[in-house]
Length: 264
Image (cartoon, rainbow, N blue to C red; front, side):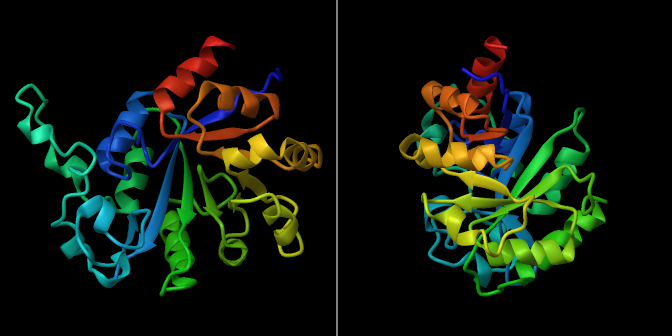
């Protein structure tokens, strides 16, 4: 086994046990020792970046509507948490939760949480595509990062996407931000190489590592950094570590960190 100790990145917060992308999920991830927080961002109809994975609200807010068609004030009226534990209100012993922890989370609020936290925490921000707003998502993201002084080389944030076009947009707007090209399949990296730049990080899913280790080894041996999603099993953590992966994106930041630290 290799000696690499990958960074533990909380996928949508501590999302195995908390409603994804809520402030409650990210607070839990920080409490569990997550070294970075991952989020997906979409643009509302009135131009706010919110942390939501799906283009529609059916799964996480029980509403038949698109994120892009709603204003932030309307989204703030919805419950983004109860889908995760639908019977919680019937549990007399369940702790009383702050309703703010289950509302839609703006990216600005998440950035403020990271900025004000007692230790250094990084951010891995994925822009979702396709979207009706095209490049406006990346423009708004860079503007917001710049508000925090985080659009330069020393930024704690990196930007991820399955769209190489989106990453090239970010590179034009903020040349020093780190970029991660997310990979669903074994041919994605070869397909994007003509359009990518040498410092792009490869972001394969764990299934690509399992099924195509030789490909991942070649990418790593070429000097490319690897950030892998979504890593929840100990056997997959071991695989990532043995292949020199720099960051593991996990739904279980606490258990993942404990497992890694126990073997240091």
